[in-house]
Length: 471
Image (cartoon, rainbow, N blue to C red; front, side, top):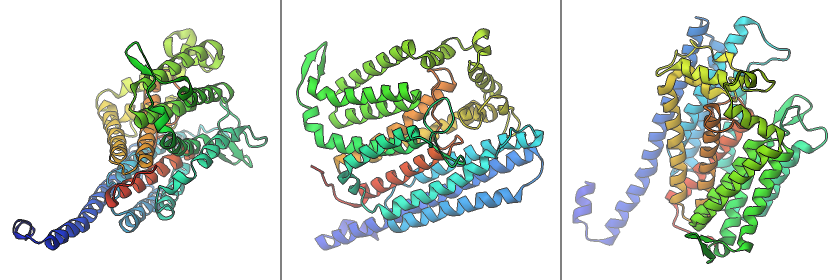
């Protein structure tokens, strides 16, 4: 019927009807596709937990599946809300985030079961998988709040500098007397000694919004003609100011907070968004030079950065392995990856618990041991698709702010994955970040699911509204 109508209808009114019908069908098709993928992700996650239980204890813990059922119900609620409030949102973002989070919980649960079976738990030990499920519930509620309360993401543009201030204050929060938590890096805050949170995870979202708004406002001056030298057009000194300020702030984070990962992440995010805003490769060249020079300087001046570089370069040196905070953890993770081989030992059949922090910093070697190279490659492909959808949302954005925001958030997640995977596989020095969605860590999980909500909001606007340029 629609083919005949398209071929034979000369009237403009008929054409308008056809376009309206297509506009109605497309969102429904997108949401149906999302529903199928979400159900598939939930099924795979449940199967992973079941396999872990059977392989480690041989019994089925119905109560644990009850907790998982609560999170599954929230994911379905999120899907229903998207049908109602954001029908044109990207259909792949939620299923991928759900599957990655589910696989991560299954592996964390597997490590918990080992310590429960041996009884070798430190005082105050809690099941990390239970905590992760609770944080997932909080994360899904936060995502629902973004979808329901933020009807138009362009409202964020109005509060550009407020978000910038909020990001800086969040980074400084661990220095407030009485809030700082114990640890080598001053990046955690503790409330009443019970509740711990890493404000830097939320700060990266605030700063991404600030960078997007700031670059929209200053893009004209940043793309102005500079001086050509060595085949590259270099910006003028006054345009270099923002980049130099961010470089100094990033170095300050590394020096004061002893957090190499966050400093690298913030600077990399700004350089990437700067390139997208201006299209000038000179900014990338300058950014790489500053990042490389800063890393070299930090390794020579700051003992803890130099220690990380030594662990990286001389990981298999026995004297380095035996040092306190040496390369023992890194080497154990690499041995675990080697033990996994091509297809892995199987969920619940490996020994990932031999590596310290196997459920958080070293979740990738843990999964690599039990799922093998094939499973690890599948997880990296999921990240690749997630990031590509985020970049696609940004590149098809209807305004400069949405374009920069979606691109910046997607690149931030990609850079974080590269930093963590590269660190545990000894491609680059290890830093103190978490692997998005997979690793145990409540603040990281909440932040990444908020990113999911923002990408959904931008993608819905891209498909459902005419192009609007913010001046």
